[in-house]
Length: 237
Image (tube, rainbow, N blue to C red; front, side, top):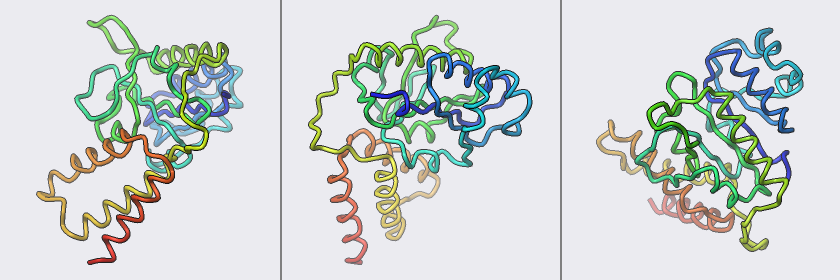
């Protein structure tokens, strides 16, 4: 297990101060990989660098993407943070459940914007949603505070080597890139047979498909098999 396998993703962050504070919190616990997606402020800027204090190196190495999908190509497991329960087909976990995550894989923690959090569409790209226990009548946490709580908890897990993941080393879990490519092939074939009807329900149907694929925890071999099935079905037409 290594801190180099952990990435913190800020989706559409709105405030420079929060971006800088997140980088500082990461460095407090020796994490190095940050991704920002479509940030509202110019990235990077002087306020971000000033707020990051001694973590300017994290800001300078930070990757900036336009879309969530493009940011996940090299990620194996995505854990989305949410202050509210989502009635979606995504596994909901608590902080203590992080002990069961295989941190030998590339794991990303996804944080929503300060104003609106994560949409159901963005949640559908995740393997799990994580809720931090807070006052039920005042659940919302500052972006950097949420990140720091999770960073500290992961550090304690890594240091104590308490991961209980016992999956065979011979079985290689599918990467996020592999699942994205497979789902694209499936969706392409479904579009060609005009499956998504009525059109206004297509976004929800796509969310449900992604939820199914990620909940299955497919192996690389299984993903290749399904991709072959989808490709063959397309050729049959």
